[in-house]
Length: 114
Image (cartoon, rainbow, N blue to C red):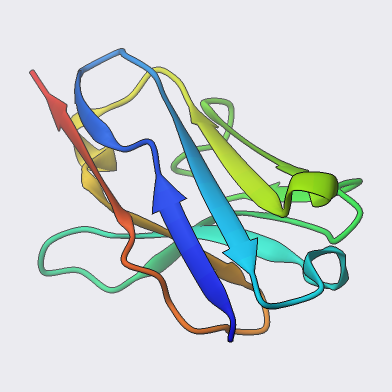
């Protein structure tokens, strides 16, 4: 069955960096456009970045543009999110998923502190 496993979250200070990874299994990964989503406490889950199946095109929410970079390695069935210049408002649980929804993983917690 399809499984998405996110990792790389943690506690970081304002201005710091983290690199998230999402390992996929149970699907032909290269056929899926992928995205990173986040859900802050009391908020709706939102899409922050997405990448086409070949990796040749990306999209970013305005709130993260210029600070986050999404990438993928189809040979490793993995999608990444490089997060720089982190802000307090980036605190959330981060999930990866296909743009066509797949079963959600457990997510990885990112906490930005002052």
